Image 1 (cartoon, rainbow, N blue to C red):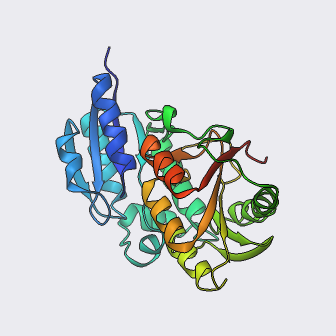
Image 2: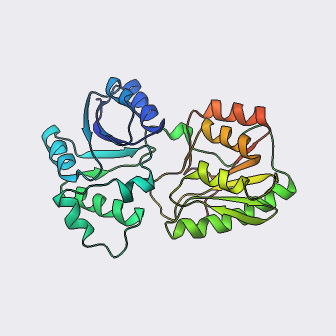
Length: 272
């Protein structure tokens, strides 16, 4: 029997791929496109589409009840800067925000998840439809990391897990076992470009980790072919990610592009 659920769609390829997978399975999916983020093409892939603004929590919950939907997943990025600058909270979200001691991404999404649960709506794993795209352990392309690159990866993972644990970002750029740049609200691509401007042509290692949580409900690390394009631009030669918790969107194209550029793509068991 086909499943019935909703997908809250942010930007990028993630929601498109999730909706395509749902259609292949014959599922009935209601899409909620975030006006400031989602691509209009989601309308052709979902059973029905509603457009909502960041902060319109009451409309989301009321529409889910109207549709009789009790399972929701989040797919796609919402730029962290948008959360803090473009969001206009409705009365329900405003009430929740007043309870927060800190307004980082974890806290903001966490109170929304709790509010959904109180309304009988469960948030399910973002990766449920795309498990085949999760990173695996070990080298995923042709090239393996050298001894020097492995040292950069190990150092980078120790730093990245600290910043991820503090809900600052998920990625760091490393050169010669030194941390060149830390990701914050600007995102991975801009962090890499900033790093490249600081190292005078030295090769960079990009390390991306999952946050220190057991679930994959939201803010799942994602990378795709565009990341490889930026890495080539910035002379980054290694991409290291958490296996089983990082989505490689358009995985075959990503690995083909990495192989063509001589870039290592490697997965590691997440640090607990």
